[in-house]
Length: 312
Length: 248
Image (cartoon, rainbow over all chains, first blue to last red; front, side, top):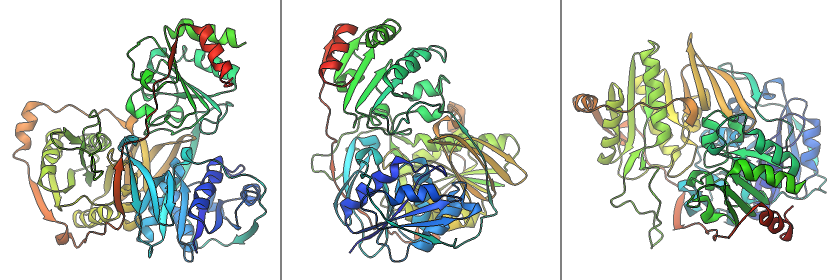
């Protein structure tokens, strides 16, 4: 039977919703599901992980050198836990993408990135070429399967579990060749881009950082998260953590507003799982209209304030 | 210090991808091939490091058949000092690619390996991390700023929560993100000069590496498409449409 270990993602206090999505993916493989929580003072996080339905046990490893999410330290702990597990899964977030290949290499395993569908214990689907093709991947059964879970493809597993929490000692000391210096957070108090039900995104057509206030104002009225195209990030209108697309965040909100975004294929890759896509653009030939459920051609500088007042 | 930069030959990022009708892969006949865009950024960073007097030599390498020499020549024209083709007749999955890179890094006694964070064909985002693991060295992935000082690299990383700064002792592996720099354009005289720069060809097995592509990849299919929806005339219609569908 499969025995699956999920690596929890958290900020020290709160478990990321990506972990409950990994549990759904693990449930599709089938078998016992454990969650590893690595950090320092992670009692709350471990309790949140234990409350996810379908989880068998939570393994909590607390140590000062695990507080920062340095993959060089985290990988050693996961490798030490790995024996006895058939599958090791992490989220396809920057944390999981940084960490899991390091784990895979230390175990001598290849990795399956961005698992979007599970067909069998060692058979999965994943996107390639910026989502322009989907492939089947069959992994060998005699090697630990290391994978990252494309979180936008999976619903969050429900609450209501009561898993046992086990404390474990760290297996390794800190790596002295890496030091964590700090994190400059770009995001404010708005809903998290990757879990918000509604996301409002702006593109290059906004023209400036100041004009982007239009997007924030509309988003706040809707209680929405805020995203941006790569062009808007490159132009310095918004911080990098708002980028949606192939190399930014892959999201699946119920409603996605693409405002002043032409719809480059790399951007569309990040939103194609959205429930409803609304596009506002002054160019009627913009590719975004090819995939939008509701399109409105016109000047965003007129439309967005109008929209805001009509929604008010 | 020597800097190694990996470059992968991929379908140019402007090409519209078409899946072969038999599902065995994507169409590459007559399709423009280029250096993976992230790898160009990696090479640019290495060249700037050398130009700033912080490295002695920049070596570009690629794993593949002879076709990848075209991209290696482009790398030489950008300014790399020499090139190494790791010859193999099939694409390498990341673990094997990382093993080949490790052998090369050890042979060259590289002080730094700079790689693109992912190749835009397989979108794996694995090889730099795997190389760092096999090498027993630190990794700094998704770099948007790199500062080399006293045998250390201070790297700003683009992460989901914002910009994270870490410091790693060299040797190390850095994987680069899009906003690190803007790669230079190659000028014609540089292309001529690049023809005379050394390009070594070495077999994968000569590096002591065997192919371990143990993931079977099959059944390429186009993704489900979203159909085109409706176009409304004005904001009022948009609002009523959203309300009718129960979306707001």
